[in-house]
Length: 271
Image (cartoon, rainbow, N blue to C red; front, side):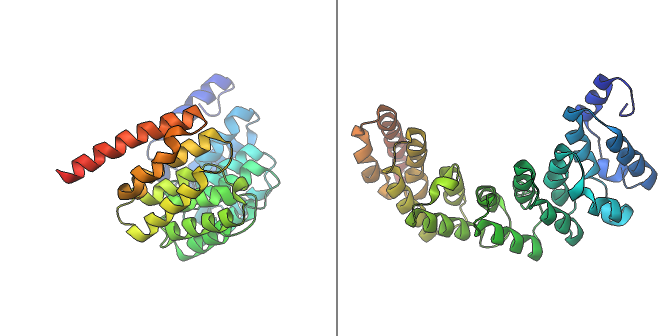
């Protein structure tokens, strides 16, 4: 169906995907056929889906030269798919070299996908080389640092949560948080993990208290209030009090709701 002249048929199979694709495409003839199909596809909306399937192939074993050429593929949709899916499927030095090349891609979405694949929501199996690459990206000044810190929050590499907190603290001190997106998401992952030390969670609490009182971005300030409760329940009530009468009514309402949640959790803790 991927070779059908009707684009609707091709779209249907791409949407459905392959069951046990890794085993199916371990056969070189099947893999070669898939790569030929991907090479011929011209429908932009389908190229990315085909790139996702191609990433299943063990390129190092079957088509090393072709895979090494992917960073120069003419389709940014295809490059983005390879950047996003190759490393989670094959966390090898071979794959990492390809992904690193894509971190310098001319297309922003490809660069971001490549950096994100260093964790891929925790699905990428960590290796020393992958962990070192993620650390370098998360502590650098490139335009993918936000994606790198997001990846670090879910990475299974040792010490990544400490790194995330340290980097956000450093940027906050230098008033350079503007390049980062949702810092509350990054920081909440630290406090929700039971294995993280209380001292690290208290650092997040202190950082959230300082940042929630800054700026005029109502959504960002509200999102930080949730961290008070999750990072240091004992200090949350007092920290929320100033926001109960905040000039922004949405912030005040959120503080009221969070105070009620804190009260409930404290009651449960005392039982």
